[in-house]
Length: 564
Image (cartoon, rainbow, N blue to C red):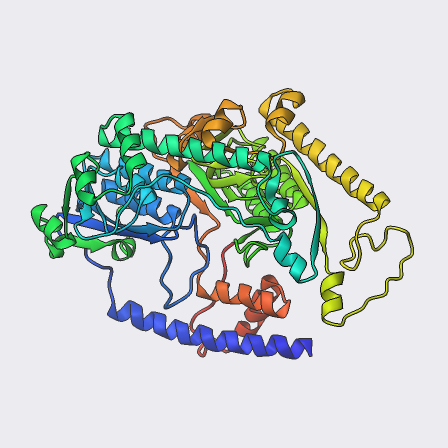
């Protein structure tokens, strides 16, 4: 049966390969690389979520905008003599402030090449304005809804909801500020939870005010006053110096003497090939690690909807880069709220082995907390944005007891066990007092190891680290103050540090290897088949190769191969 399923999958794959090979041949024959207009302006539309990186590629599906692609294409456009400037069209963003600051830094680098950046805000608020403030000139939609109010956060508590369903969370935390369990065990914020959250909001708010003031050449108090008074009319924002002009997109472009024929959109420009940045002989690898951390392979979705950082996948990537002689240093880009302690340690250990042979620099994105901080420890330097959420050095463990829910729907269980604690994690009963002691003992071991590793890698006394740990989240600004990171900045700064540590001369052009590399359609299909059928990609590749060799050469004028 298993063999029959494999044969059926392979036949389907071959059919799809042939169809896409034919389609690709036709495409190559009848299409050509898009042309870039003379004295062109690159237009980038920013709205919704901006991911760190996307590895899979599916046909007929729009590729989401990513930090990786923005960085690469803006670097191309910066040195491309055909590109005269950049037009940003900004609407509501569904991403963190650290990532917004990261993109803002990329805009500043682009503008430093004497190419203007014009930002047009269609609608939005503080986050959208922070991004626009990095532009040389900021325009707002004349009739749009816009308000730059301050920051707020809401915490949801599900204890009473679970109780109505007959479910009770028996969860424990190590660290006074490790508040994630309160979602399921509380009905409101604990004092520690509220204190940490208020501190994070004040830090991020302060960094936004200072950044906007610098970008727009305004007094910080004036910026605070306008935010405190908001919402106000767009005319009042204009009078306060937040905007350069109000208008409509077409009228703004007309006033700037940018005709539609001069505008090339980002997706079209990304299909062009020249110029090629980051093509030097000595290479720095930039590894994107985004999502919840778990054992096994990357991909899919975790408990809270994020992508999964698989310890096997990421460890393999780091191991491969350790063996690659052309790679002189590695930047690990972390955007993770944490996850499995075991998976985090597997990744950290592989990073430690890598660090023994070449520099490793951590670049933190929106979140690098708990396990996300753990995997960042084995590094030459740790760099974060002021708005990055990091820390959360603590441990959570426990279970959900579903007996009450089972009773409601008529399910009963009986438990048979060979030892007193064999069924301690059963969802049909609570922990006994002895079992609870054992759980807390295991948690304490994890927590002590976490503290020890942080102290070791940060060169600090364990007592000092335990004081700033306690499961508390910190902003990048506070993390720097508490010696949890080494500096503030984004990806370009992390690469510059890695370059310096690797001893690559400043005048020498560097190459950059992005990891994970983008997979084509067939590889994405094979990985999907692996998830659905249980067969490994390597098994399917081998079977596909055998099947290809069984065809006469005249019937199979092309071969499918994979480069890993």
